[in-house]
Length: 262
Image 1 (cartoon, rainbow, N blue to C red):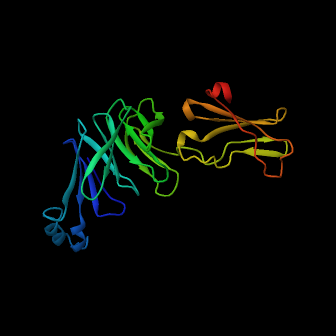
Image 2 (image 1 turned 90 degrees about the vertical axis):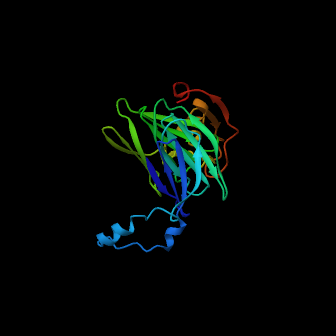
Image 3 (image 1 turned 135 degrees about the vertical axis):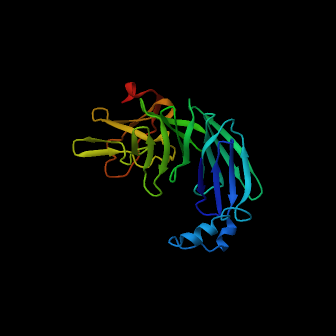
């Protein structure tokens, strides 16, 4: 169903309807000379056993899915693989020089998982499915962060931009290109002053500030986020702190959806 090169090592992973993911060592291919593309006869003769024999050796066979596997992806920097299958599960695998093993299973999709990958810049996993959804998972905590849905279209394929905060997803009626989170910070303007959230020290998607509201009468800032299903932090800003770089007092925190805090 799919085959992907490792970003750095001489490895290929493949996903199959035989319910397995296989990792192939293709180091021997470095010693082969590939014919020019316009030399059709020579190329066809060479390809008779090009990907066979000792050229590609199965290094690991990952077994754990109960139905056919549709996709498997390498992590860009860590020895991890993520896979998605018709058993509606996303599985995380780890490998070393001698073996590979299952780390965890992510459950939540209601139909076949079509594609799954690691985000190139954040510690998250993104998967899509025939259940018409795209799901975002915390790769460390292995918990769901967000779900995006389409009303009528099944999702089939995903791709992450290697440098920009962009993903593309193919569905029944076309393709969408989107960002998982905005890059502009939450801010509020009051008079000739602007208040904004600067680097909250979190890399998790669900902990980013979504909105900031400032009350000039209370001289306080209310910050809302999606953390824990909806939360807020209320900061009282010292009135004589402008221009001195002073920080606000310890925040008052609470749980609540946007209806209550934003």
